[in-house]
Image (tube, rainbow, N blue to C red; front, side, top):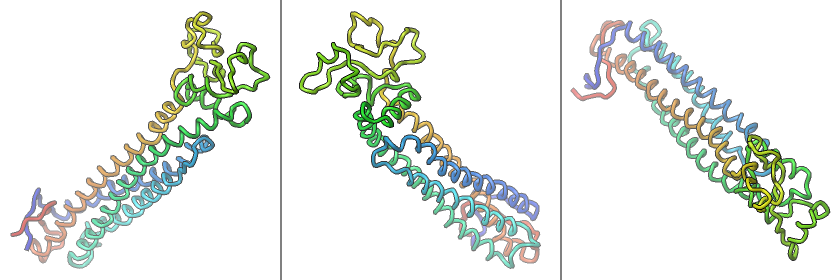
Length: 307
C-alpha cells in the first residue's frame, strides 16, 4: 500500500476544503484563458482580413480553428473538473469511498495531457503559419505592385500599406525602379528616354513611400537617384521594405500574444494539477489514515513512495 510521498503534508477536512477553493480559483483562471483564446482566435480573422488580397494562397483559418478548439477545450474541461473536485473536497458531498476522487483525477490527467498537446499544436501552428505568411507576402506584394498602374484597387491597397506601415516596396524603394507603376502618358520626357525595349528604368517611387516624420520637405520621390539634384533624398522616404515591416507587425500582433497565452495556460495547468493532486491523495489516503472518520487527517503528496 502506498502511504507516503514527496513532497508531503497532512490535511484535515478544513485543509481539503481550502484546497477545493484554490482548485476552483485556478480552474476558473484556466477557463478564463480558454475564453481569451477563443476570442483571440476569432479576432485573427479581422486582424488579417484587410490584407487577404495580398496574401497569395494564404489561409488564416488554421489559426482560428486551432485557437478556438484549444480555448473551448480548456474552458469546458476546467469548469467541469473543477466543480467535481470542489464537490469531492467536502465530506458531506464526497462520493462514497475514494474511488470517485481517483477516477476523477485519472480523467483529469488525460484531459490535461490533451490540453498540453493542444497548446503545443497551437504553438507549432503559429510557427508554421508565420513561415507561410513570409512566402505569401513576398508573392502578394510583388503582384500588387505589378498591377499598381492598371488596377485602382491594387494602387489603393499598396498605398495604404506603405502609408500604414511606413514602408516602401517589397524589400525597399529600389523595387519600384523596375516596375511599370506609372502609365506612359504620365511619364516625364526624361523618364521616357530611359525606357529601353519596354524595360522600366525610372528611379521614381509612389508618393506613399514618403516618410511623414522626415525633417526634409517637400518629399522627393521622383528621380531619387539624382544625387546632384536631391542630396538628401532618402531622408524623405521610408527605406524599409513592406515585407519586413508587415512581418514584424504580424509577429507582434500574433506571435507575442500567442506566446503569452500558451505560457500562461501551461503554468496555470501545472498549478491547477498540483493542487488537485494534493487533494486527490489526501482523499485517497483517508481509507487507511482515518478509516472511520471522513473528516480525519491524511497525508497528501505529489509523488507516491511505496511503503
